Image 1 (tube, rainbow, N blue to C red):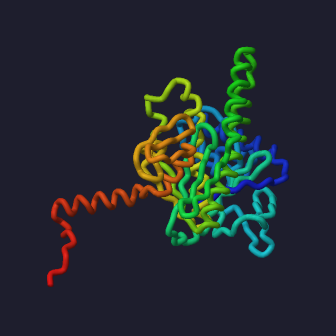
Image 2 (image 1 turned 45 degrees about the vertical axis):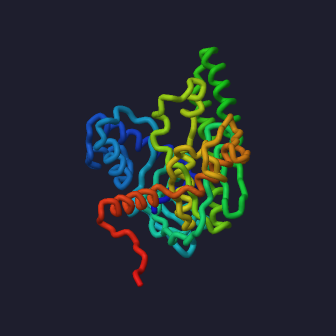
Image 3 (image 1 turned 45 degrees about the horizontal axis):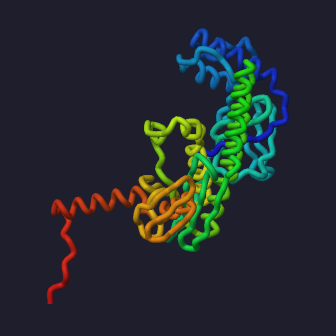
Length: 337
């Protein structure tokens, strides 16, 4: 799998970045893809070619905004003994001793402070699991609630995200009334804090799965924002919900450790009783069922997600049932004496 890591390069690359911007602006203006046309800017051809390919080929780019130095894999050297990554064209060396083991470096992008290294990382085989933990992702309260039906244990994670959203929503509203132009910076700060929380929550979830030798099950939430039945007061929470970012982080962290991830149908996971399977009543975060079961609504949903068959299993069962009905597969019969 491909993995991108961030390293601080501790080098002043302002001259190289200025040259790269000139090359990119020339490529946008003339749609040039030849390094001979930009030789006079003085940028190394191995970097200039990558910038020309990015900006010269893409006609939808009208202006150069955030410029980076792009170095292909063949321009990067790695010493496995000293674990030093070298970029000869920039006379740059970085310590990679704390990085995961990797097969090769595919590309590197550098800005004024960091180097973003894309590398191929070997994937371990998936663990053989008998049970799953269910992950219920939420817009309010805890952003993720994990439950393990085998042990009955529950983990509530990421409660601070709702506070962050409410805090910065009010801050943006106040600044907009004052006609101050700091709204974009505040939104970026909010996104960074939420991203950091998602990293920590996803790591905790994968660690729980490894410690309990379980797989991970989540709801398949594709297209959830297209539902027009949501209340107006709920739209902000829904639109600021970073459920896909958390899902992506869980997926790649689980893949690195050989943990399987499956998805279930999200229908009625919050309304079905995890004890008896009947539809109960949900009021906010409270869930009650006619069988007498009372629980936190998100905890009840996470147990339902863990116990529900994955979408692949459901499709396989429906196909098998259809084949039996259409006579392509014989139904099992009792042995005749």
